[in-house]
Image (tube, rainbow, N blue to C red; front, side, top):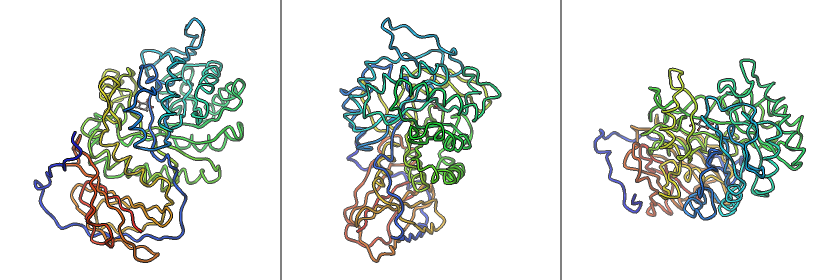
Length: 486
Ligand code: BDP
């Protein structure tokens, strides 16, 4: 893809209409919390560690792509394959007796070799990122978790932020993981989780834990947030959950229009978090998620729409109190199967097919093919421009368009992220700041030839606007505008 050429505009095909007139009022006081520098992160299947050369200090292309998102982001290793992985630490390399056979998640177990974790250490040291490591809670034992944790802790050293124990434990009764049947509940989970964590602490007394890494049940997050610190005290250093905007891929509503319309579940989740987070004093990160589960939907998850969705999603979560979002991806080479189609049937083959495309991954490729940034990647870069800023209250009159605005201040500068997810309406925007008139320092658009574009997504600088007052700004339909004001 040639990022130097502007994309061909296909908009002429649609009827020209008057732009929606929008107005944004930014209050410069009170200044909200400062967003972490690692606001945008990535998440990978644990099983990616079985592929040589991926998370490796010699994988320069992948390292640079990570640095292009953040200089100190969060790389979460987990997913369903973390619950079917085992630590290959015995002198003879043999597999310990697992607590349960792989069930609907995978047809096999994945062996984790110490040398791959050493390569991971080299990789994250190059990127400046830190790791959240998921231990096997699904099919492993507390003793196995302890052995793996001690080894991983020793190898990763300061690059290890925390362990998680179990991926999406609120769905374990669906997967049929060891003895988690119909009576599986958040209280049973917290009890079992505690015995795993205590087992880890006997061999790794400095271990830190995040959790609960749940899929959909926010009441499990609340329970974990209240209970786990009571039991493990300062060893609990963060809270986590997952979110997929759509899915499965074959559901009729897994569309671009639906993705961009906004999701009331996000608002509900933020409200649930607000009720519990302040009292815990712990950071909260969406450690996994993406546009559409089961590997994403082609034409949606890999299109420019995913960039518009992803940028808005990160900023919305951040402005609601979330400290970071890790987008799931990679793992094109990982064979694993889970989940159901819209009829509730397991579709292992479909999932494997989806996985080989890994449609939602912000970064596509393998060490052999090389790597490319997918449209979503640019959406993360756009959202990451709010990192290290302190959020300012915004009052937005959208003029009827599906426009969102987020403002963050850093010293004397205000960074603005404006996301026009509207597929029909261009926007003309006037901005007023409570502290007095401000001028545009820089102005970049994230655009593509159409919301369906699979490549050609690029930032376009608009130097002509520098020094101007922020009024009458064009925010075309399906585009992002990034401004700095001074
Ligand atoms: C999530 C799992 C992850 C899968 C993803 C998907 O945690 O391992 O890869 O779904 O279905 O629920 O794409």
